[in-house]
Image (tube, rainbow, N blue to C red; front, side, top):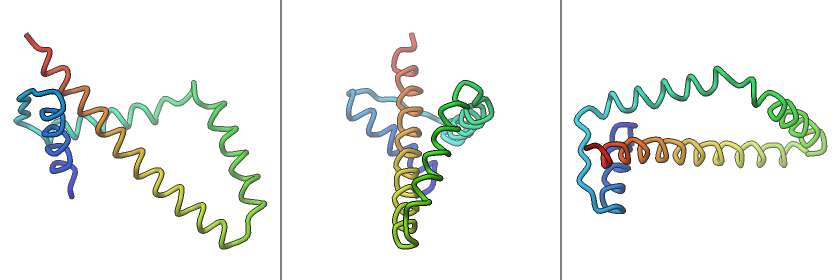
Length: 105
């Protein structure tokens, strides 16, 4: 399912969950806004630098203790976790946008 269809589905779920009738005429704009938001988030990671550094260090230590099969499983696990996180992040962003639209006067 492409991003625009996912966004429409998320908006429909928002409407169902909160009994609203939010309509977004330009879903493509919303998705571009989302990706620009992500770009800004990843470009300014100075506050997270310490945590990211420690995360890399721990990951390297973990990988040094694993055999090839375990490394492959860990990589698959991380890929699935990343996909799930991406979907949740997208849902949160779109729900926030819908909330803004629902509260407009």
